[in-house]
Amino acid sequence: MASPKRDHLVATALALFNKQGYRATGIDNILAESGVAKMTLYNHFKSKDELIIAALSKRDEEFLSWIRSAMTRLLKQQKGDPRLAKLMAFFNALNEWFNSDTFCGCNFINASIEFKRKDDPILAASAAHKKLVIQMLQEFLAELHLENVHHVAKQIHMLIEGAIVMAINLDDKSTALLAKETVIQLLNTYPITPPLKLT
Image (tube, rainbow, N blue to C red; front, side, top):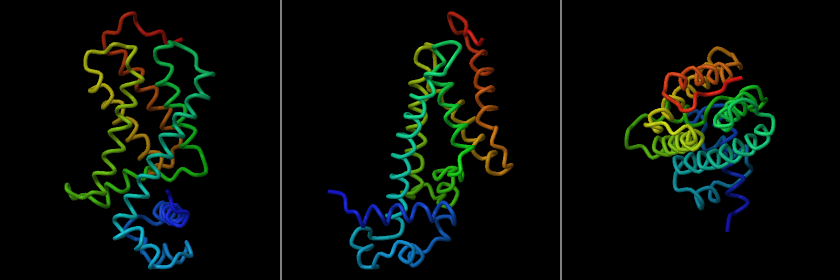
């Protein structure tokens, strides 16, 4: 059974990591913000690294649940080729995220920058989330019957990653829509039968 104090610690840590970064956020900072005793924290987590992984797991679950929910809503408004509907709804959901008050970049990109060692479990947790997103993109591309759908999904994922970074670095919240436009151009380079209907 989940512990309310554990959940509160993880939520507090995630909020602080978003604001301050992973390494810059100390345990004492998390304890002060959460109001939880140090002994309670170490009853749940052996180290700060374990707490970071728990925070990333929480963000992974929240993001994937949110994006699917947003897509369900946006699919009702989707026009154009029905084979592209889920993929286009995904990018429209990203656009909503980029333009929301809660957008602060990607937790997993940020973690992978701070924890670069190949055998670091924090890097592994970040990579696991990205692999799930690529799998999701493959699902969206299924109806196009592409010869190497995993390769195409990775190409699209690369555009998503770039859009996130540009949205933060350049303070340009239109990058999800630019990435969507680029994805359509990319897909038009592949032999898809019948051809895509983009109007």
